Length: 78
Image 1 (cartoon, helix red, strand yellow):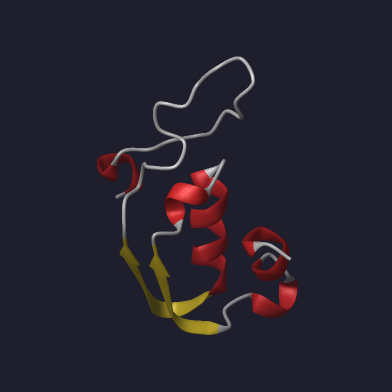
Image 2: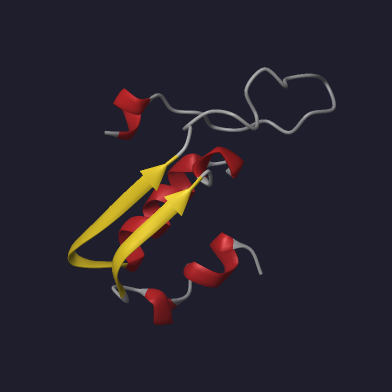
């Protein structure tokens, strides 16, 4: 399964001390959904480390046949 399918399970809730993502967020059609899942799977006091762009894969690719995505700036993510 994909990230949403695997980690949006009840068994993953508060299961992880840390989540590390590398060139990952830019693959999301809905970055908010990814961030919510990351927050849900982290234990209280857990940390999230992200390396890579917040915008890349879907940037500048809007055409009539392209998928739309939610894209946030670094300030929005903070």
